[in-house]
Image (cartoon, rainbow, N blue to C red; front, side):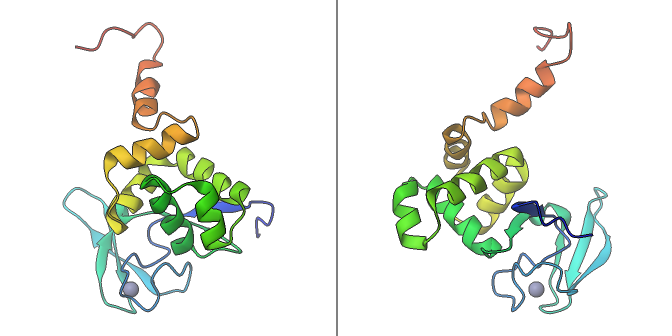
Length: 159
Ligand SMILES: [Zn+2]
């Protein structure tokens, strides 16, 4: 069943080819990705039938949306991370500021996966990615720490 109501969702690794040079780069559900065993660490590996590259499930997660190709979304987020203003991006890319903010919020909800994708595909630093999350009020990595600290009665126990 199609989830038309969802504006954008993450495409998980194994549904698209993360290789920029590939003909099917970032094309979701084209049937070009097959499972290809597991790494020593037990991470699922995949192979793209189009470019014959193998990659692991940690190689990136993209989100996709009906009206914007994943690479546009990621590229926009990368530029944002580099300090380009949303208003400028909106004009340059032709997406509404609200649309871009929506991507950013969705990205922040999947901060680890998106960070992986941004740092893997673009020249974006960790600090710049953190800046992105700060932009939408998500603490990013700090949020992950807070999650750990949420254990009741366990705060302050860390060394
Ligand atoms: Zn490929």
